[in-house]
Length: 218
Image (cartoon, helix red, strand yellow):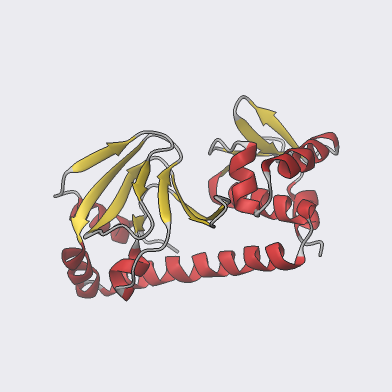
């Protein structure tokens, strides 16, 4: 569990550096780009994705406020191979990598919190990779929607879960490793089956148990 005091210390550390703003769909970090700073996300959402030679994208993670990246590059000192793109208007703070590493090493609770985030993120990614290899299109889309509902969902009075992050069919396709056309077909089926609906630009999960059941189909 994230400790409030830890979050505050992280915010305080990054708070001494200047903020930078990015618009929706603007790239913050490019693959293979030479970088020397770590980004702390103050406002908005950022997606981490990989892209193959044909230009097909696979979303690996979505960062929400309080996250900082790219830590595999900062800690492992490996060339960054991924893209970080603003999904909404975002505000980030850039801090020198060496100062970030020094700060993390000086605070065991911050280090534990970061490790916990990485482990949970890897667990979720492993489950999604299993779905991509062994699942069908319905289970892949369902798995992506369940993940989004768990991470960004707001529960309503009737048990429905509104995903507070606006996800287009292309966003869900990138999460699921499918084409937009296939994803659109599956989501229409889910809507007809009463599993999901839409509230303005947001997906609402009407039947979380049912969606989880579809996500578990192999």
